[in-house]
Image (tube, rainbow, N blue to C red; front, side, top):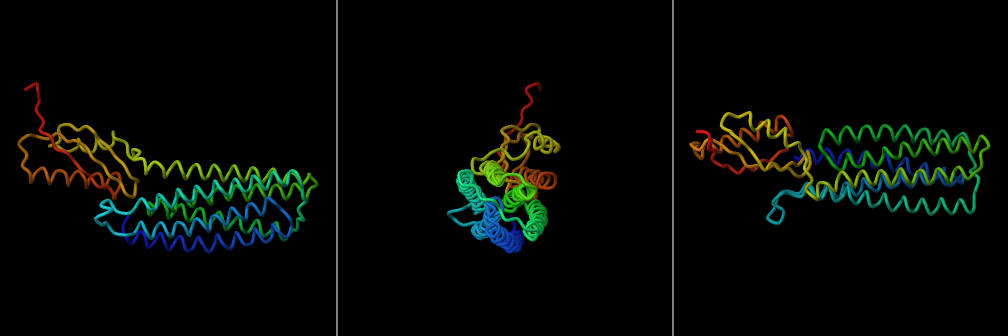
Length: 292
């Protein structure tokens, strides 16, 4: 990721941080006032959104450091580590909410629901929808793992807020207070699923999971006349920091200069059709047609 991209990612994270903190404060205060476990749980979930932004800012600070002798491939995986830390935070907060929900099952408390609290919840819901859409769009545009992961976190917050809103309306209509505790449990499962998605998508980078379709790379490379065959195509990293290596069989008579030019043209073609952040390493082999 280019340095200017990291600057843009940091700017987005600061904007989202202030929005999430405002939403969290509103939900926790209102949830405490009306004694709603569901809204308070939703507020703490929103608080982890803000905390995850701080973790993201730290991760981006490390990831934006230039290549050095100890990190010849750069520091990009610090962004991946930050995203995994966010997943761990989500697992922890989900466990906390489950414990609190069980306590409310044992000692139920009826929420004191007011029209003002419902209006606040609706307002924060719309803020979360804007935050999620904005962050996801920027994350895809900037190829940022941390922004995409954080938007998934916020997306779960949207469904959670809808669940809390429905539960408060149900209690106001006369259903038993236990519905609030049930909502808290449902919230915890949404958080756990969001954590799983973040872990799944980011752990693949650390274990060098294949990033691109080898068939597509093969088709692009064989589009050059000098290339007769290719094998051992491998990819790792992410779309914003992609490494591809392969064995390319070429005409035996190619000079070193011609071979060097060929590899650069193949890399440029892959950058145009797959990702502009590709780095290609190729092992050249002479091709001999056994039929001749």
